[in-house]
Length: 371
Image (cartoon, rainbow, N blue to C red; front, side, top):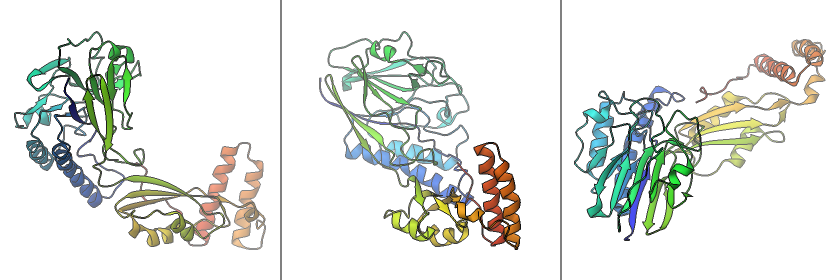
């Protein structure tokens, strides 16, 4: 069998709200998501792939911006090979979905039924099987399925689903079903962390994760998959098209000025990225988050600071001093010593931190809500 090159991506979630960002930066990020489509189209050309697969949740919902639909059409028109889209639980196929309204190029096929269907392109050396979510949930779609074998033709699956989670509401798939499927490669989506190349029986499969992070639950490098099938052999090469990354960095400020400690640990080239910096360790006074933000924010597209340091034991020794600080600490120290659980003591310690921050006119806040 001749080699087959596949570009496999999933879970773009176009038009995500980016609720953790302000309105202007969220708008920038949505625009960058649209640009992602063009980069995928360019990659399909530069890598000379034979097939492009979108395995669900290309869109975040059926409420898409007009510009997103236009960019989707423009980007897909640049791809000269067959493209298959299997709608997932976020962008499920319905009469009101964008997929039912958009006038897409003839080489684009969108699966629209909640049942495995086949598009036979044997003349190109492959058949593509797939199905669509037609609601936010889907029963198992691969159960009892087996593709027919044809000499010199690859059987490819494009599908949104969850492997190994028996009771999943999102098209649960078992390795046994994959091994008996008669497929050469199953291009899956739904899980946002890349699986790497996996195998069940004679079937290779993977999910690429999301190609670009949208929150601090999707940190680090994100990629899509370049799959090369050559007879019974398969290889996977992850490729990056992301414009920004989400990263979390923990910094111990016990023995150093917090600003110096952050700068010492900060990697190069962070200005395009979105960072959460978590301060840890023991300190006499809470770090001044307002001052830190003023000095650090220019190094990032967006910055969130979290103070998870703890008060040094020596701070409690000042309780009882003839001052507002001493009286405040004395009251809390009494409650701290009487606390029965670590959780109670932690809450009291946090109250002390906030109180001391207020007394010192410091800003004890977290920048932006969690995502």
